[in-house]
Image 1 (spheres, rainbow, N blue to C red):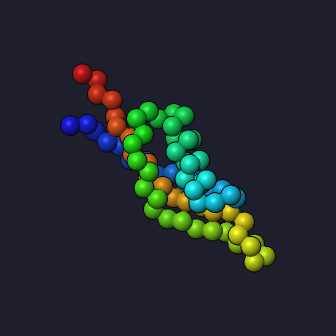
Image 2 (cartoon, rainbow, N blue to C red):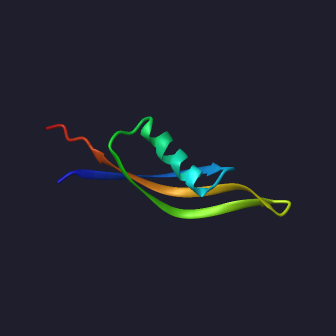
Length: 69
């Protein structure tokens, strides 16, 4: 049975929620192999002068840990 590890990351985007999630996965994938899933835990938008300035997401990203067998 594979060992699964979960890390929490926080990202933001001025474009949208989808872009923020994609950024999270892309950044984690630069240093972590075997990324399997992303679970969006929280979504928040920052508002300035009546307009959305940025979309913030907190994600749990899971990945399989390589065995050393």
